[in-house]
Image 1 (cartoon, rainbow, N blue to C red):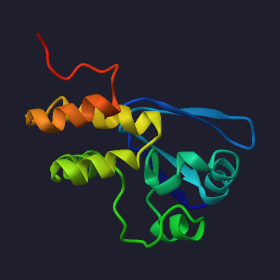
Image 2 (cartoon, rainbow, N blue to C red):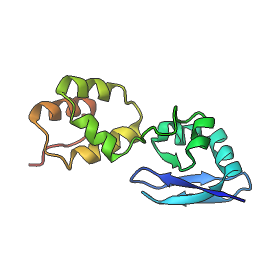
Image 3 (tube, rainbow, N blue to C red):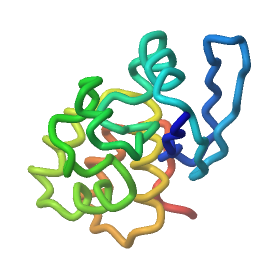
Length: 139
């Protein structure tokens, strides 16, 4: 039975349960080797875990396309590089990009990356509007 690598793209653990009742925790930035049937099962009960690779990424690109989680095999996952690219846009385009992101785990990922970058005040204001409960400037 061929095993396929499933990567956790986030900085928090993600728990999954297989059809046989076994449950696994995929550590932050870690991976788990699963069979195609196990991936299809998890995808059927929790499709948002794999959607556009925002949380979990399947190494078998053809399988990811066939399951409908990505549009084409060479598409890039939503990772720190994508977040940095979004934060480097102009203020107006960055605001549009942020408005298209509603999932709390993605907003948290953007916050974590934004804290590590020296951003201008105009971009910090946009981020503060999107995340009013987060602190961007330390006293």
